[in-house]
Image 1: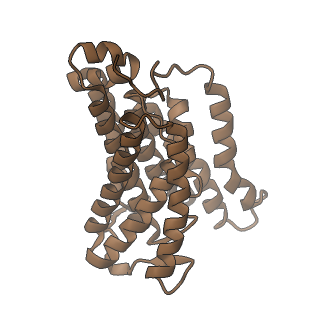
Image 2 (image 1 turned 45 degrees about the horizontal axis):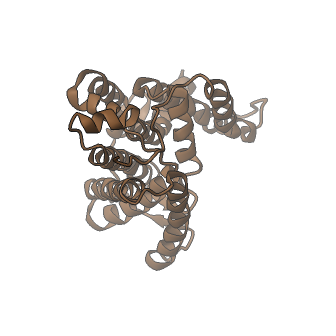
Image 3 (image 1 turned 90 degrees about the vertical axis):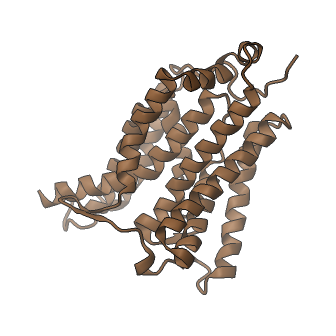
Length: 296
């Protein structure tokens, strides 16, 4: 029972950055923007959140991480909409910039070039539960997909969001500012990815390294594909990744386990590949996804 409770706790902790980032990307893709720079947003936001928490406390760190993510999302949207840039290239640029920026930041702000550690008193508080000490951000990640699903399906603003990605010409004719909708969607998506990144450093690990994102941004993209732009299924994908990631961590605490922990550590990535391979041909994305809107 102790091992089971530990597994559930680790699963909940591990699903947060994947779920938040995937839900944010679903908002952006629903509006027609495809951002593969999520890995970079997670990494930069984790570093910015760590700096903010060390200087002004954990809530400031989370806010700064969200702000940095929102700014990167806004910059990506501006390049993709008003400059008509190639969204794939813009996303790759974000990822490359993030690696260099964080590595430089480690050298500039930390005595240890490999990591920046947040003082223990500046970590976000956690609740004591039967599954261990858990962050309140976990509740946000569990509830948010249902809120976003309701917003997209049941509100007028959600309909406008879908129109911007599905039929931007028709949306424009009806008086909707397609580019403004897309920029707002990408900014919100970036903020959620930023929260996921700041969560990792401020509310989970307590430190940041240049390899901290560890492919989570790409797994979030795979989760979006798996979900078919359904935020609730994105939550399921996040839990799935968190579960398989947790198996390796739990096995490390079990002496004499028959399988090597290294094998279980690679399972999340193998499962992600298999899930995407099975879903990629069955998912219907917005017709104007990745296509800049040019007014006739």
